Length: 185
Image (cartoon, rainbow, N blue to C red; front, side, top):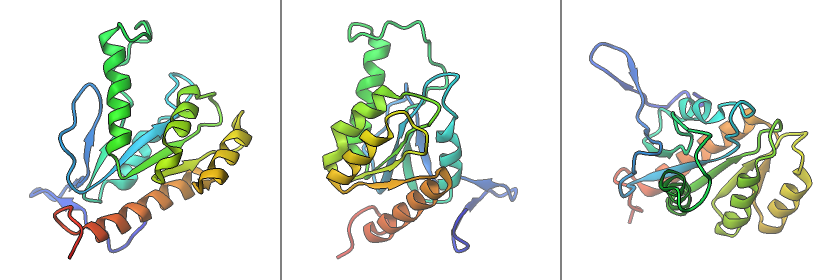
């Protein structure tokens, strides 16, 4: 973890346990209490690295909710149309999660085209809760740079710096919301 003062839950047998609550589709997430982050970004099967798992591990000592849209069992044969209930559920889960999250951590894997991530950047740019990582040589980096500039979105060049920045922002939010998830005062 990036913080030496971080607290990690320890089980009675001495093993480390994550404090973060993680939800992935098809599991519904409850009303979110406290601080939350949605892991938006490249998911393309067999192209995108599984950055969501790495970021989840990086954030595990925070008392937060992580919404990770990467299904453990995705069927690429699913018809990607609204009339397909599995596909529709996935898209609705992601939209709902991004609307509810305090932070949208958006990663553009340079080995992908990520058209849905580009769409989501456009949808949520005005919310002021998006933090973007877009390393070279992402094929539409210029578009991402211009949108981020236009909306005042933090744009980070490397995955390591992105992970550190997300961690620090979540810690700040955690402190400002207090233990029960409500703003102090």
